[in-house]
View 1 (cartoon, rainbow, N blue to C red):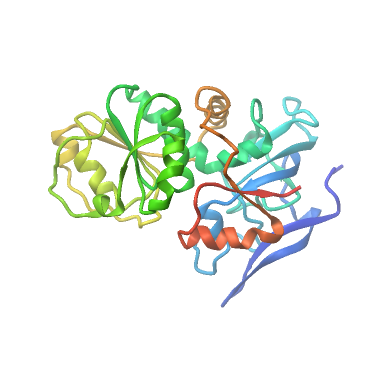
View 2 (view 1 turned 180 degrees about the horizontal axis):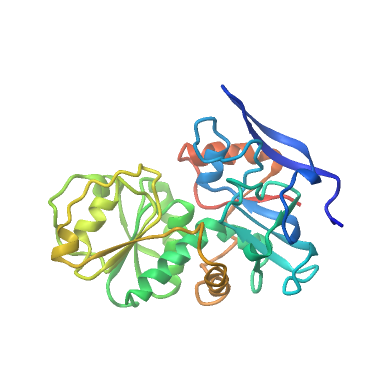
Length: 331
């Protein structure tokens, strides 16, 4: 028997042949998909994919109607899995959540037990202040360090530093003692990025100018959260044997680069896909996000929304106007 009320509030995107309707509506419990864990959602967050899921031409939503929200955190109100007890604080993100299955912008949600991450050392709000974007940043830092990057090796470049992935990557790298350089096209973000741990800065023009196939080897590693506009510069300026962890395509998916950095300097480019990370690795990274990967000032200086004010965040992130992290109070 379900512990979810017969109806509850949710933000819904409904796509028709020639338009999309979005907004808050009363959602019916039987319309939720099956799952072993029922959650009273307390917090979610705003991600680029969430914004696209609420656009007619966003090409993200795979069902209609859809409750967007690719991550959520809250309290377990019913569970068929003995390892996930009633009353536990948990989070879920990735897999089909908010894309092909109803997501976090609802007062209640039903989720497979195999998608659940127990929350320890972080509140639900802190977890969503990190969110999918912060998890992707943590994945990126772990990937670089697994490839041999250590503090003291040299400067590490983070592109798209004013966004959710980039800003959290700056904070984690700075906390771990790396020399962090932040690339951003928003000069007014420099003070905030310096507080997060950046010690050097690049402008958008420096990152996007055309250059030689290989330039001065500068970076001991890089986290790229932008894509087509910045990856060519990153690749041609990495030091021999260095790695870039790439997760962004906000500037487009096309890669205009040569093979020379790979075959003459032995650099590597690793793709960061947070959607299909196996649950045990996902849980280990979240455990580290509460401990040695914990970003500086987690949960501070975030923009807080509710379901009623959610649309401004969804529109802002697609328009490239969102700064830092946007969290959504659901409960």
